[in-house]
Length: 172
Image 1 (cartoon, helix red, strand yellow):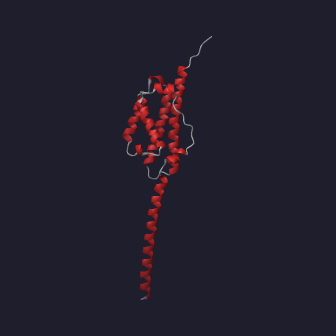
Image 2: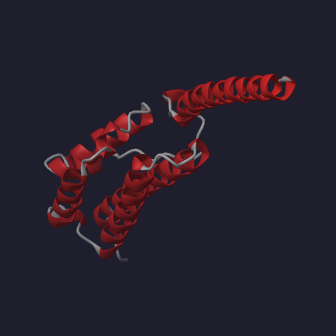
Image 3: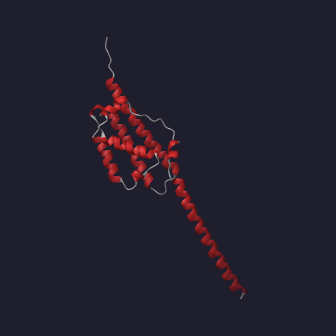
């Protein structure tokens, strides 16, 4: 009789302890999801050199709509908004394809095309990592940094191209 009571009591203790472990795991997962969320504060801590476009360059690319769309994406990323990347593969592919096709004549050079290709690679990497549930916050921030550096590098290269083309060298 004592063995039966002890067995039932043991089973009850095991049953209730398992339930408590399951409840604590659910709380940990919710906390992990909050920890993975990227905020504007996290992105502002990223250390990189950001190049803006010169006034001459802005005049040259003022009609380049795809670049403006890309600039909006970058602005949203800087705010911590990665919603552009969620189930949006077709739009991303179209944007990048059109960005390459519609490069203004004044800046159409292999160096610009190479920077756009580097930006494309980082954009695809950011898209894939932002859609994965297993991506850590540290990985995602490193990928965002790579994308922002690639965009800044594109801006620098466009500025250099315009500056090089507009310089006037007088020969003696």
